[in-house]
Structure formats: C-alpha cells, structure tokens
Image 1: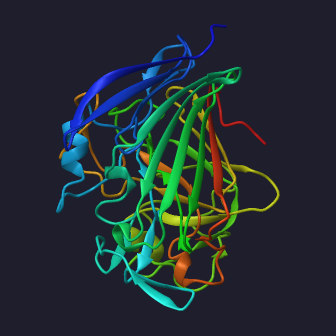
Image 2 (image 1 turned 90 degrees about the vertical axis):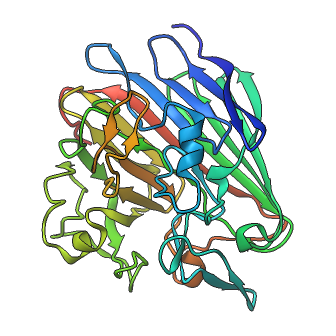
Length: 363
C-alpha cells in the first residue's frame, strides 16, 4: 500500500489573500481536498463496493462560489466548513459569562448561528503541511481577536486534518484564550455516500449512538430537557433509512422541516454514528470526543446551489453530522460547559472511516 501524500495548488484569492487547495490521501484510497479558506473540505473521494472512486461530500467547484455564499443576505449553507467561534445557535444573540452580558450578531432570525455573519468559515487560515509516520496532515491556524463577532478573549485556534495510515480522516481541534470566553467548534460537511449531486439521501441508512435528543421551539433553540428517542422518529439506535420518517407529522419534524436537532451521545464509547448507502455500499463510521451530534437532513438545500460536479443540489442532497456541544449552551448551565478560560486548552477530535459493506453491519 502506498503512503498517503500531501500536495498544494492555488485556488484563487479572497479579499486579496491567496487561497490554496490541499490534497491529502493516496491513489485508490480516500482522497480529501481541503481549502485554507474556511477550512473547507471541498471534496472527499472514496471507493464504492466495486472499487470506483466517487466524491461523497457536497461542495462548490470554485472559490468565488464559497465567497458568494458567505456574503450578507446569502442563504448560507456552510458546505464543508470549520464552524466557530460557536457552532449552532445562541438564543437572542446574548449570553452572560462571569456576570458580564455579551451580544453577538443575529444572523438566524432572533438567534446567532455558527459564529455570526463573519464566522471562522469566512476566514483564510494560515496553513502548515505535516508529514510523519502516521500519514499526512494539514494544520490550519487562526487568531480571532478580542471582540471578534462580539466574543470576548483573543482566541488562537488550530484545526488539523489528517489522513492516517489506516485511511481514516481525523480532524483535531485545539484552542486557547487570553480571557474567559465560550467555544464550540465543528465541521459542517454534507455527506452523500452515493456520490455528490446524485440525488437525495433519503435511502441512506443511519445509526446514531444516542438514547436522547434535544427538542426545540419554533426557533430551533433547545426547549426543556433532553428527552428519550424511544417511540419517536428520532430513534436511530438501530439502522433506519433517513427518509423513512422524515415526513411524519411529528411536531419536531415540522419545526425543522426535517431533522435539525442535537442528539445526546451515550456515555461510555467514542462511537457516534454510522451511515450506509445501499446503492454504492459505502459505509461511513464516525467517532468523536464531543457530547453531542447535530444531525441535519439538508432540509433547506435548494436547486439554486450548483455543486462541484455541475449538478444542482435539491432538498435532502446531503446530510450533516456535526460533532459539537449542545446548542445555546452558554445560556444553559445544565448543559455541558463551553466555557474556556486562560490556561485551559480546548480540545476535541472527530474521526471518519469510509469502507464498504453489502448490508448495514450489526454492532
């Protein structure tokens, strides 16, 4: 087996700053293409059951499309991007930390979403190429100044993408601050294991290692305590097609026009989720150190978006599995804390393996 390789090529300019695309992987194995703009996973090629490579994530073909999708007023979809400082929603765009109230920009109705209108997905990161005995890696670094998008503290963030010797994609996050702040980082890749632009993912089978999820109000902010998934359309503890129950008149599905909720991952194991496509046989397995998993079934994707393969993305063209802390955690002391203080290190790791199977594997 050949060792994974790492290459770099120009990918345009954003705001006068050069942007590059990095390719990590080996011939015949998973091949990831990552931008230093937004830390975007632009494409990820993986073999199907017959050994044919296909791109299994949604993305844009050129930098201008990413930049245009991040402009004020755009219907942002965050394809493949690093999300920060705070992934998911903060109710009312306000939170109190150590007795001080902070206001962050509203960009999702009455809420702040994914770090605000100029979150980490809109920035050009500093890149370092890494080659060692465990594969190849791309380390991206971003310094977010005190007050950036309303958040306190100067935050230094590192996100490392690694394709290891076992052909797994490992994403490691690290952050430090010089003043108390809140941090919740994730990656917003949309998956379609049948191949990018081939249609919706409703026939994909999904398994999530979670016995509870967070119901929300009409604003998609968690309301009340997490509740059991048992006897609800949110029970993916055993394999179920994504589309089997997505159209049911369950009030929570009506609110999100499908799935857009946080699952509380069960304690005791890092395994988070698996997805399997019967057409290609591709199997995605995901592990994480995070307590929550936001499963989003691509409810608001529209045909106005054209993907890397030149085909439009319709509703349900991909699904996101975002490993993170819970939405609105800064306003919910009962949720796992997202507070980071000087001298502490924020750290999380999420690992993806792409293999094949003729049927959903049994645990």
